[in-house]
Image (cartoon, rainbow, N blue to C red; front, side, top):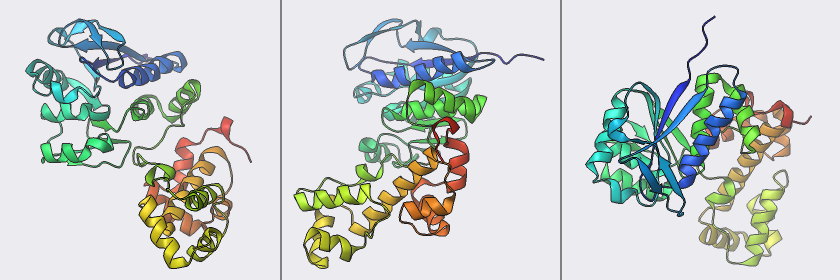
Length: 328
């Protein structure tokens, strides 16, 4: 039986790049090498010029190869991001080098605003892509031929993969490992690195707490914390208004003003997040998950989960629950 070949990964860096965009995916591939029965990855770092390349945190990385000297087949070409990306979009050696290597690569990927480099190289034209939510609007304005979606943590469109901000590079690399070796190895890599269990690309960049601002008023902060900690309680507007000591109308108005989210929508998002955690960490049947998260019935759980996490509860559990981390 023929053994699988080692996959070559070329990661492109530049002065001022985000170190985690390089280190996170590289460690995912290295851990996969330790756990895979066959095949694996060989990671190379390349830059416009070979040699020392300073990251934005001041740590210097050695780029072993100049972009113009990279030759031979590439399985994955990965471009990192960083605060300095706008300064490099006019660098024709960088953009041209990425375009040249992408033409012969099995797949192309970016982390965070590294997607701007792919777009500048013409690799995202007519494709759906994501990037860090802070610069998604700028990307859409600059590259109108790209369908920019700021919500998912990563997107695959054909052989091009783009991911959101910083830590989502780990999710992207785990997804690539899953595509190459299966979800079991991806889960084991995540466990080995003690990172969040492999998330689906359609999952939002924002968890329920991240989607809303922290209220200025202490009573509203207490309400927000109560909602997140007690999804199965009565979290209707009348009940929450009573707990806050406000009229329903006043409570709805000030909660929306101070969090940016109406109370009913915040409750649904928080319950969706609680359901996601239970699906990842327990073997509870869906009706119990629905009850314990205040969603009532499996049908409601399904609708809410599809709306917020873009996969069905059952599919999410099959793909992303670790048996070792589950409890009955």
